[in-house]
Length: 227
Ligand code: FE2
Image 1: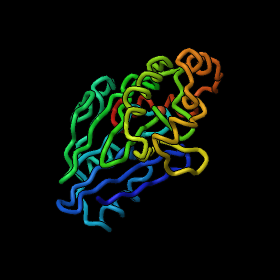
Image 2: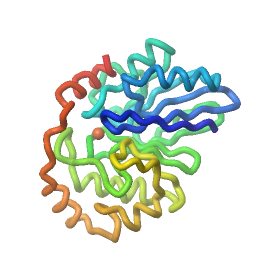
Image 3: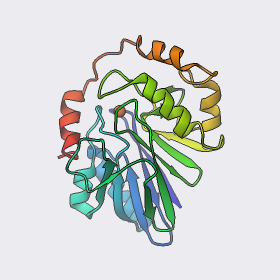
Image 4: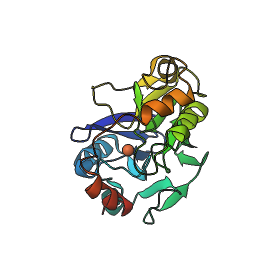
């Protein structure tokens, strides 16, 4: 499988390109509107055809490139059916399978940061969006966030994966590229060390985070697939 990780510095967002060498079909997970030229270059360089864009959730901090890429390449936009977005092409639910050439991507519903968060499992890797971050997790104080739900999602849907599964998050603010399920289970600052659900809820409800900078622009734009 062809794999490439992109970084958008303004919102510290990671985007992932996955391609099948046999059929040249490719997907982008969480593409950012300002970065379309970089994706185009990578697709050209590897002779790949973009088939799908997958958004792990309706983002509050950047605008999705789903619409721009659909216009440019005819790719289909995939989102969870709880996303409240009606311009997507395919709406998925827990354990939906998405075929890319010779690979199957499994969707795992991981709500709690938002009510549409989905992680994607493929070939020993999991793309966790803003549910599980490296040494952290997504905030739970807006977009239908709920710490109890997030705790259950992470424990049932992500910590149940093999320990050596590579975790690729939706963001990292310290330059880290990836982690593993084993590492996060053991030492994640919010969810590791066998932290109980009650302790997690208490901590998440007392983070007192600032209002997200771009939410008033990004949310309406993303509900229109980035238009
Ligand atoms: Fe988010």
